[in-house]
Length: 500
Image 1: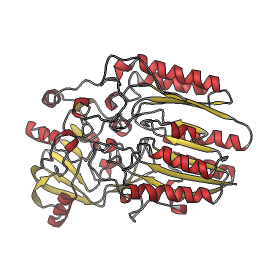
Image 2: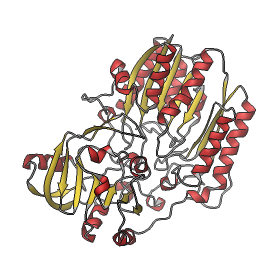
Image 3: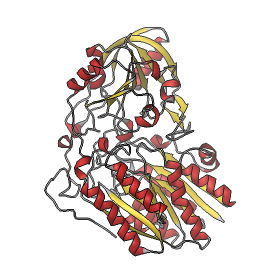
Image 4: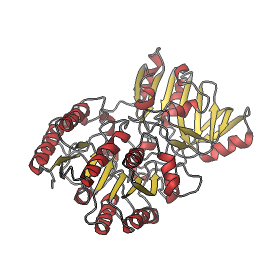
């Protein structure tokens, strides 16, 4: 038996100017292309990823694995058409050679230069090549679900946690019913639908109401017999027609039940839609509150500019506020500025340097230009920027920040990286000789994923509204293509839905 397994992941922020060429998908590979073949299998075997789950199941079943692609990139602007063609052609070429099942770890919110629904277009090609072959798909919670995704798969399962600490489990939820199909023990049937709502990302955490309650409902449905039940919060920073919340339920041969359960999930989400709206506090007030706090570490969230939502990670507004406020004993992760890293590497460890740091990326979608910040400090450390996640998120996965430096101003240790990296794991500091538990303040360019690695040590949290294309202020985003009316852009509307 031959099974094709592959990963192609990108969450596209259509307001971001960070480019997305093929090289951005080469994480874990010294070459500027994604991992393929046995190298991909070795890189992801035993990791807390959906691909790791696929590998484990295939090995347990004793089947031949073919891994044409393991591609993952931090969110950014639309994927270049050439990169999309390279990745999808490799997957399709493997399928065209014949297989008994197909297991794909996709994102669900990939937008390319030419396509609103990159995953749906891929699945349509795969289904045309393998019209009768079982296809299982694992998706991110931030999927913007399109019909082509569901219409061309047999099983769809999405993450049920945010931060995403159940990626491996989701791979199992997508793959196990496919193996059951192959053995004649399951007949998956799916129903899906959506509601016209754009939940703010800062209100999507599964530690928080209402997503905690919605995900608990999905888990109960699975415990009571559904093969998979998923609520997708959606990714609102994609100006595409079907951006927003949706659900998909897979049952064993019971289409009516799948439809009823799907409607139950969506009705609950719509009922609690107001709780998905995030209230913004001005930065000055946030930093003033932080100054009065004494019990640390105190997490300062620069949530307008984070890698996991398409931010450039070089907006300096929050860091500037921290420096001007005189906050002491701070570690900041991170500013993406390869030129600054090169300058510090040239100066050498121990040298005192004055740099125009960050602010290299303009943000025309929100009418802002990049504003560098002049900073003086000592080069404390230089690194190749490679480390493995400890977990619970993406356990064992290799990260590559590119050449990295730590600049110590005396009060703030600033991590400066050469490529974007979300601070979702304790190891991002530990690998650079920084003990986050010893700091009074941790400035993190993150929204929710920081909780995976740092919530256990955080004594207090302060949201800091800076500047960036991950803004939680929808009034700054010029939505032209998303379906209207939609909540909360339009408050007075009926709970209409699209469903199949």
